Image: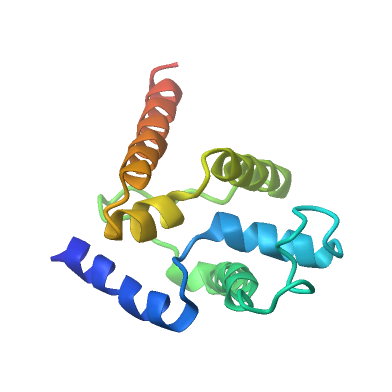
Length: 148
């Protein structure tokens, strides 16, 4: 049921924007716009306003994260397994992780949202393979972290 609901949630995104949801593309549009079309040329909003919603999506993700961080003390407690929630990571470590995640998404031609949600709802073979590789990499990373 959850998968069908997630797939159906793509319908309004496609109808309104004519495009799928993906943060890797959104981030490159934002970078292109802020750099005056120097970085990631051709994707700048200075060039075309059709994807205005994508940078807004990225900005709102950050706003939502800051909102949750502000509410953090009231949301703190135990996870569903009863394990205490850990404190956050140092800002430089988070920035490096974000950079690596975005760089990896650009190399893979999409992120978990773009491949795993939008692409698979279109039954794209590339997206099924991309999502499998993304989750396989995450599982391998977790195993390395746990067993070393």
